[in-house]
Amino acid sequence: MLTYLLGDVLRIFAGDFKAGEVEGTKMSQKMLLGMAALMLIPIFMLFLSLTLTYPLVRWVNIIAAIGLFILNLVGLPGYPGAYDKFLIIVGLGFNVLTVWYAWNWI
Image 1 (cartoon, rainbow, N blue to C red):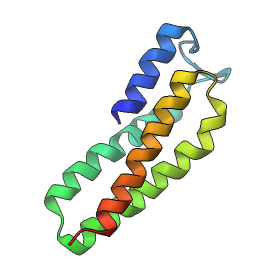
Image 2 (cartoon, rainbow, N blue to C red):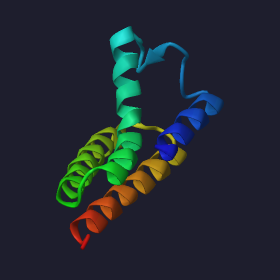
Image 3 (cartoon, rainbow, N blue to C red):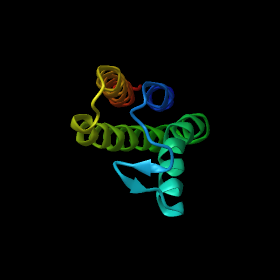
Image 4 (tube, rainbow, N blue to C red):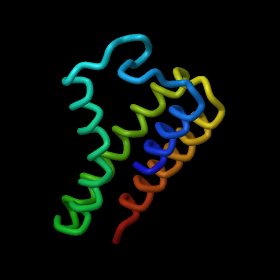
């Protein structure tokens, strides 16, 4: 989540982001709601890791991390800046680590 937020902040400072638009399309309330929901996934993963029982929390983390991995992988070519690609690759690495730790959780 922090890598996503850092990428957004850097994109604003670099001038790669036009306020109120995503790739030339004006942002709608549905788009903004979707973005907000997406950013909450890592927070929910943390909360659920503390509250769910072992077998269930393992699969929730694996499924969420794989979903975020796929989303980031699909979006990777669309980011022009080296800082964006770096942060996405770091995020991909954390998703792989999450799956690995959840899979090997005793």
